[in-house]
Amino acid sequence: MRIGIIGAGQVAQSLGTRLLELGNEVMISSRDLSKPKDKGRWGILPSAAGWKDEHEIKGKKASAGSFRQAAEWGEVLINCTEGTASLQVLRDAGEENLKGKILIDLANPIGRTEGKAHLAFCNTVSLGEMLQAEFKETLVVKTLNTVSAEVMANPRVIRGRHDMLIAGNDYKAKSWVKDVFLRKWLGWKNVIDLGDIRASRSLEMYLMLWLSLWERLQTTNFNIRIVTE
Ligand SMILES: NC(=O)c1ccc[n+]([C@@H]2O[C@H](COP(=O)([O-])OP(=O)(O)OC[C@H]3O[C@@H](n4cnc5c(N)ncnc54)[C@H](OP(=O)(O)O)[C@@H]3O)[C@@H](O)[C@H]2O)c1
Image (cartoon, rainbow, N blue to C red; front, side, top):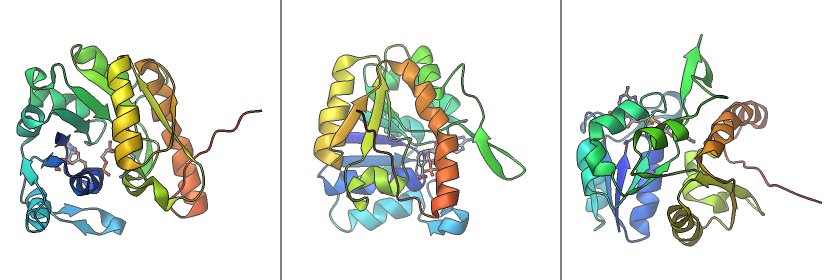
């Protein structure tokens, strides 16, 4: 399948690589294809073009383009952009290129004050809802935003049972993301459906707890497991 990834950063490269390994065609996208990604304490990632070359040489069907090109080319799209920029990036990518397609949204709208991360907006609105409200004919499915890039692409790095959460309005789109994308391709065994896209509010608000856990645990390889009586 042709997967158009909007973005070329840590998540785009991590998920993109996994999706290539699974036999898909993947295009990642950026404002500047030749600029390496400086991720501070995480090191420097290849540019979008560098990522493409690295995988093309291994015989994988990798490509790199503009946000608009990836949106037009992809049969399924994944929003891997900075959450506060996502709405504008997707507008620039062209509503007509998103129409009728599944858009997996894993972005968090992170703002910063004095170097500390917080949610730029939350509680009464969420990015997932904003995207669905703006792109009415796009099938927005919110998921994966609650774990690190590494865990997203390879849930087996965490031992034992742990859960992925999902929300979206369109039942068929959500079923495909749940059964094919998450379960069959990425190996997410337990997926809990939180209902329609309004639940992306709580999914995004989880970021603050995730950040506290990260500070405490000193690793990004963790996730939650929901237990009931
Ligand atoms: N990293 C994680 O472990 C993780 C986990 C869960 C959720 N997320 C979420 O996933 C998304 C991507 O995370 P990431 O770590 O991959 O981020 P990243 O490495 O910083 O990459 C961000 C991407 O967003 C684009 N972007 C940023 N600001 C932009 C702007 N003003 N206009 C247009 N494009 C802009 C960048 O485009 P250029 O290529 O043109 O610079 C880049 O491709 C974020 O929303 C993040 O909250 C990340």
